[in-house]
Image (cartoon, rainbow, N blue to C red; front, top):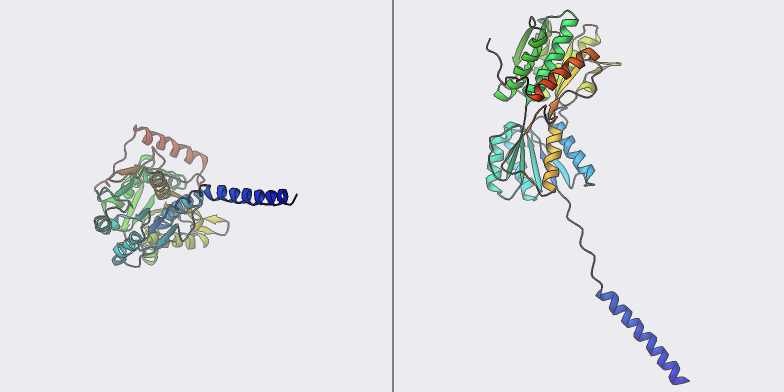
Length: 350
């Protein structure tokens, strides 16, 4: 009996060791896939410029949240205080080997080209420029003149209905890109209100709200009823001026740009922002980030975002526009998207 008991005990121990051996031989779980990392380098307007930088960042944030990425680690930004910061900031992210680095604005063109050459394996994206033709850079451009045509229609119809004949346009810097906004706006206004007069001024700056407000004061004093800006942070001064005048009973309107700026114009229960020309930089940033994560980075290509692919347009909700005006805007949008109406990119010569 003692031998049987001893044998049984040894058998239990042997089986235990055998079980342990089998467990040890089990394959280790596969390591988690590394997180996708994307970074934004802002221009001088900062991350909360209520325009271009902010819109681009919102697209990155949406992409990050959809893919359960960690804010501040997997998706983050660096702010530029001067143009001299562009190359160092882009290089900082490149040294960190981010999967994609995005820079919003044609002013990044020179810096982007330099960094693309220095880091040939780094995937880069520049928004609003098509001059950086590098295999590791994707360019995103927009049909700004098409979206600006629509807000021109809105401004023309609103001014005509209210018996006002003077409108305004404020640009940041006078480049062909910003002139596309002016050109589309003028054509849209004159399509529905040929008699309207449009005042035009360029601030020479995208990050000077005080200049924007001063120019707006000049145009409003000259009779402008509605002003459309394509001036980044400078345009915030124009919206501020429209709010202050409207709050005092001198109703004036502003048209925002790049993103829906309706809330920026709120005073009391109203807003001085008639509508906005949305340049869907958020869509561009989001879509290219997704393509890159999916292994389909479109390096060396220029992607065009237009009315046809919803890359530009007006907000879904426009409380200050009547159903009749919105219906006419839609008609023009359909004509442009179909190619039946072609909008010029160049302002008419005065």
